[in-house]
Amino acid sequence: MKRNIVIATLTAAALVTGGTVAAFAAGDDETTAHRPTGAAAQAATDRDDADDSAEDRRDDTDDDRAAAASGDVSAADAIAAALRSAPGTAVSAELDDQDDNGKVVWDVDVLGKGDTWHSVLIDPASGKVLGSHGESEDDTAEVRAALKGSSVTAAEAARAAAAKGTVTSVDLDDDGASRAWDVETRAASGKADQDWRVDLTSGKVTADRADDDEA
Image (tube, rainbow, N blue to C red; front, top):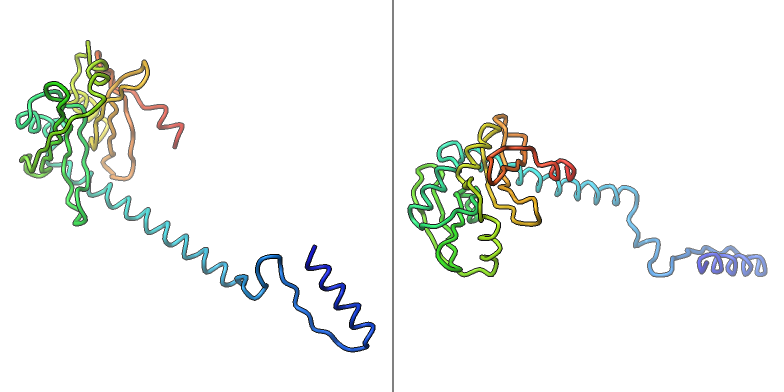
């Protein structure tokens, strides 16, 4: 609206004086000169797309590296090694980048006595324990309640899901009534991740439908 008023006023002045008026109307908060041209806007969009593509490639590289590393020491093997170092109940195991140099390790969470948890790092090539630290957590009671009466361990869940692909993580889903082991696998091609649910008592493996819906 302000732009139209300025143009109308300058046009009227030109008609009265018989002169020629060159006017540049601006928007409310910025001048036209400050707005990116079509080419500049397209260049900015291209840069954003390139950044997104680069990030996607980095994520894919991390996934590929993790899947490749898991070929030497399986999730079940990593859990067994962690339990020898820190006795208790394994609740999760995941191939994870631990630092900027891209080194991938198995990170196994073990619930020990009382409220004590142990995070044990396992070399995916040799199965050796690289480090371990303990800490106390608030959700110990919930985890113990979820596992009460279960007969399938994290290692057994990992072995059951291994028939679907290379296991890259196993974790206890203790939310709600449908408690189960959540297991992620990667196909032999290295390009397809899939989430599975392993029943805590029967060991039955089913596709994670919630994961399918999100995809």
